[in-house]
Length: 63
Image: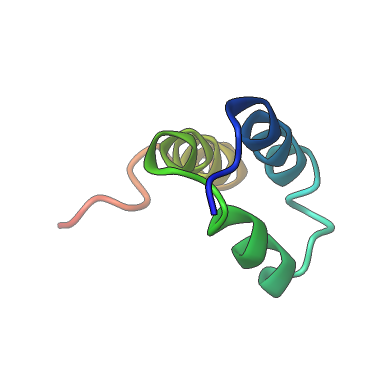
């Protein structure tokens, strides 16, 4: 089922704004409704969040 762009933007905002309080299954359910472009936005926001939380921009690099 395709979700229109406006609804996907709402989901992206919800995922980013409620990240700390949302349980994993709810996050996954919403995330899986997004197209690849919107998932990429969420992925980048999550990476930035973790980078800031860990104070290390290279936490995920392969060494």
